[in-house]
Image (tube, rainbow, N blue to C red):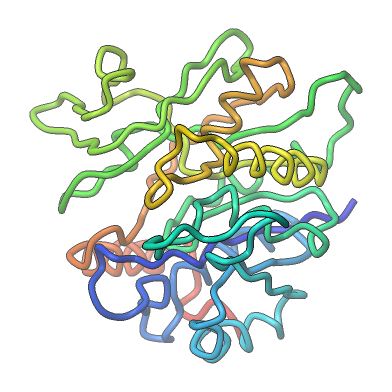
Length: 304
């Protein structure tokens, strides 16, 4: 069974300042975080990569990574645009930002036809999660009425930035590591050994050992049909903020779980996240990749 890695790289990256943060070089060979993710995914057995990007960054994206990666693994490009809406809907006046991760993955419909794993372009996940999720997608499962999914479960303390707060999906995990819910939580920080957040729903349950989502999900292609249906519902909702409202994958999955439409297996990993949420994160990320190279976890140049 073929599997695809879907990389969300359309983010505007407003907190990073000028430049495209997904394309920041991490080693002397000029390779970036996406290179490490694709290297790990290919090693785990993934067969294809689909990049979700914007048309306005396409030329630079292809020059910096796409043309190079196409020599290593088959690549598809799909595009997330603010104006890419279902028939009958239009962009509200004053809206400038696309509609969130749900719209990004929905852009894959018609292109991605294999079981797939979703990741962010500017996050390093470690080798373990790719192996676990690939194995989940390719192993035999008992057929049920629920859509089967899986999620890489990271330990919160391994996913924070020293340079500012982060947004994470705080997970409620039940028996047999099944996901009971996700609370999209903002302004998370760990100080003096305690985790804090501005999201009221998770304030009483969050702690440094909490299992969190890093938007790394394993899905069957049927998930794209559900995204299409639920995106229409989201756009039709008069309660949404027309200028800032986002159609988010974790929020949708939480709803599907509560509606008994999906079952989600949490696959825990103790790997440490590396990301560039803020410009100041860059030096620490480069130092960590340099350490892993010195320890033989990665070659000095990932691709020949």
